[in-house]
Figure 1 (cartoon, one colour):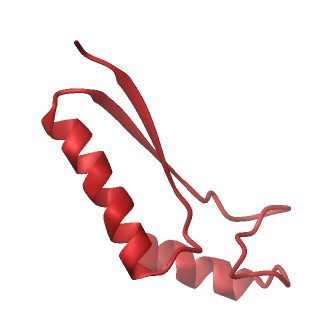
Figure 2 (cartoon, rainbow, N blue to C red; figure 1 turned 180 degrees about the vertical axis):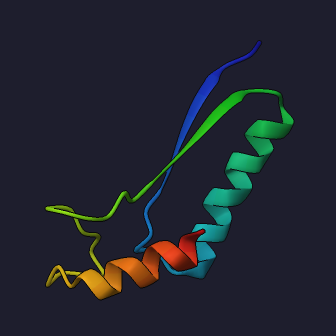
Figure 3 (tube, rainbow, N blue to C red; figure 1 turned 120 degrees about the vertical axis):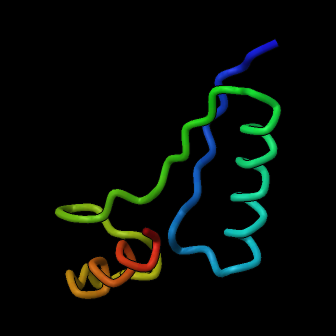
Length: 67
């Protein structure tokens, strides 16, 4: 059966947790499920937990590393 799966990958996670979530997303893709990966959008009025002071430069670096 083909399911819709939403995987949230917060950018504030360190590498082991991020890699596990990416692996889960890939497993669901391999099962032919419809997978959407949701990440931090960054920007005005919204910042992740690694950017508690809302510094734009940190947000730009984080988005660049996520890509």
